Image (tube, rainbow, N blue to C red):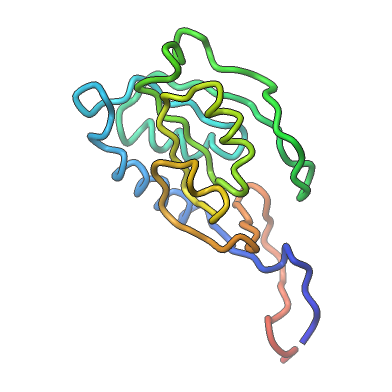
Length: 168
């Protein structure tokens, strides 16, 4: 058996799987908004939250969509999070009340801590959650272990992979 790097303990997500999981997230969020069960807007945390936010917005018929750009990773190394672009102030007024903030994953929670400090009344939802970041999310679909690296479809290409055990 070959030695594997920590990030090679991977959970590979296809476009189909991401679509199914983002729809499941929409189902969990349906009817939970503060305006007769509706949400005022969706704000995607870029870049990973854009695909799930688009699917959630479509499924819940939310027409107001914006982004908050936060950088917290440099390749596979996590750094201190900082905002590169904030959403339109009119959308996120009143601390984000009635707004869904969507991301693909909460890992350690540094990104969501920063965004939550800016919009404390928003509802935070992710498709995937790791234990350290899970307390910062109201709604998520799948929990993965802290030491699992999630390979999203936008980060992958089809290629041969060695078997986990053995070489035949």
